Length: 556
Image (cartoon, rainbow, N blue to C red; front, side, top):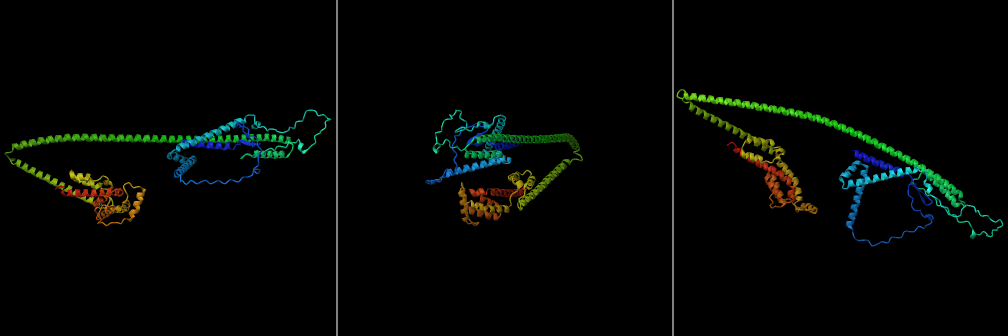
């Protein structure tokens, strides 16, 4: 956030500095010479040449271009390279331009476009250097204005021809002028015409007015024969023009400084606002972390208390269990002693009223054994009944119209099977993904197969490593194939699909999966998902039948 704001402020400041710096007039043209600012180095003097009007030179007609022999080569690689280069340049130029306008586009361009970050760094560095140079130029011009000299002092107007200075030598009053005036002996030289001053583009109104006045004076000088007064007037106008330019530059520099100060103050206010927001965000995050710390502390305390409570309850249970075991051992020992005592008394009275006690005890043991066997048979019968009921429910779930999660039914069979190794092995062989997702019904498998059948036929003519042309050719020529009946023989795709359709129509998923599994290449790849679902259905049905057959023998 802070980096984006600082970059935006620097770009805004650079743009404003360039805008106000470009508004300052830096040069003007007078008598075909370039008048520069004091801090601008002057180049070599431009030789004076007579200014020719555009109308004096005849316009020559453009010579027809001789047609050369056209190159018959197509230059495909060169055209492709040039087009790619132009499109890439246009893309990078547009991306860089919009990145400078929008921060979101800038982030996307830098993150996802190759060499985007390097390009943006180069552009931003170049713009920063230009802004720095503009600010340096403005500072240099401001310092040069404080000097007492003016830029016009370095420009001098050369004088040519005769001067107006009077001759100091005395003249003999008796001398006679023997030279007669004539057109060929005229002492008046042909006056040289002064060139007009060109008005620079974007010049100030006062500068334009002064240049227009100077052009009027120059025109009048060119038409008149005496130029002394006009030259003095031109000097005055040049002095006024220099003062006007100096005032304009001072006002523009002051306005530029004011705008720069405003931009700096705005940037400072933005920085202060951003700092306040960052401080608020830090305080909010600190409060959030403090709250989270207290909540986590309370949660850990509650967790520790709960754990301590559970450990105390477990210790109590262990103590109670140990006490119960000790009581049970005492009772067992007491019963053993009681049995020994009874046995001793029985032995003592064996020849008396308890002579048949051993026979009675043997009969009692037989009755107890029969009772245990009967209970075991009843338990096995109950378990077998529960197993058959669970198997029936699983079959009903498989015959439902929608896929049903099989976990409850499988767990019920597992609970009823107890320790039967065959039943447990069959249950463990059921795929784990059908526990919660179930399997597709026969109708769903048939419907998906009918939807997949056109795609398999379209890909039936594809070679193993087909390209784009192979795919297009297979798609076209597969339309010419005709459908085969269910009694078709062979290993081609049409016969396999016909036999698979017949098996699905009869509800035989196993045969349908076996037929589709014989496909090769692209058709088998397209039917991979269907084969997985069909195999799951076939495996579950087979294992359910195996469990049902084993359940018939369970408890026998």
